[in-house]
Amino acid sequence: MNKVLPNPPLDPANDRAAFNRGIDHYLSSQGFHNVNDDLSFEDALLYTASLLDSAPATALDCGELLDNPGRAKILAVWHLLEIAKTTVDRSL
Image 1 (cartoon, rainbow, N blue to C red):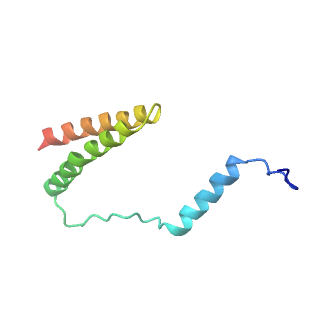
Image 2 (image 1 turned 120 degrees about the vertical axis):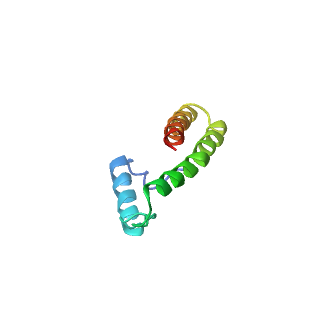
Image 3 (image 1 turned 45 degrees about the vertical axis):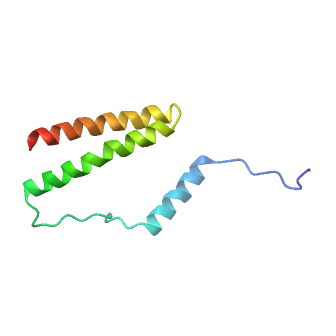
């Protein structure tokens, strides 16, 4: 079927700008997570260690479902999380 009007040329810069405007409008710049000012260093370290227990497992599960190059990127993130987890665990 012939169209009366052809598709306009794609401009990734316009798409990215529209995406950024939408994100800026709907998401606040404050972030989603606030840290209690009374949180001690030790408690913060323990909380971080517990987060780092689940993050590598999640990254590994996601990486197993993807093909390259996405899989390689997720597995690189998994490796970095494992390094961070080992560092935090050693400091405890």
